[in-house]
Picture 1 (cartoon, rainbow, N blue to C red):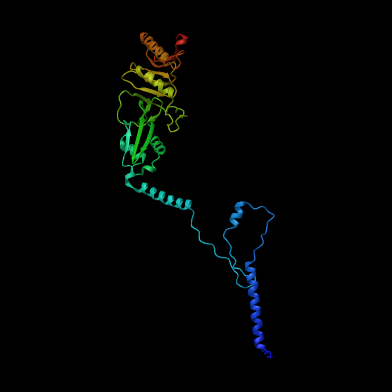
Picture 2: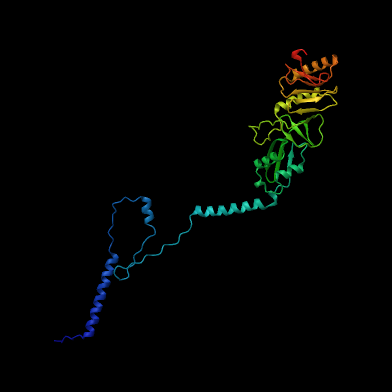
Length: 329
């Protein structure tokens, strides 16, 4: 019968520690392999939210220490395909924009001018401001406005651009009909009453000497770029009607009180007003009155037919008193 060997105190302590470590390792292993019970929520979660909540994935690693876990770092993600394509497209468009704005191939060397007769190419190109600019920066509406504002003699302007560097300017100039003289200067006036700078010499214009500034015409409602007329349309029409009856050796004048008239070669002043609708009647009345006065040997200083139903004249013999045909004097 063998005697049981008694263990020392140190051996007993080592044995207990080994047993305790084996027990803790067994407990940790059980916790690692034990499935986690699902937890249901009472609040409905949208499907998209659940998908977002499921990412990134979580990993639990058993370390043998109670209630200690480590989360694995999320794996790197690359940009989506459409984002990469967008960045590439932006870079490509930026490079293309830089090239079209900097390459001399797209810069305007000169403009093709059509329809000008008195304005020169140099004047138009300077006012247009397109020479040397990229064709992609030329705005036709801005060029048209710039030209109309600089040259009131332009009735219309149309600008067309074509790649790679062509600019076409098609214009219509106003035709002057009146040469208006006032003080020490003069200007051209077209059939609508618009005044503009004279350029050269044109035959057939009706010369008129303005003793005062005529009343301006109304601004155009259909064409905001058209300048305000220097005179009213009715005054222009009256000038054109009277022009064939002006004596060859005199010039038509415009007076504030009596309107249009001239100094007759026989020594008197004749005035016809400014209304155009009865201008032919005024001319007939004036011719009849002048012939009657001459046949009677009367030398008037003034004949006024502004009102054709009541014309009057002033005679030298009676100290320039006014005579009215309607009174029979």
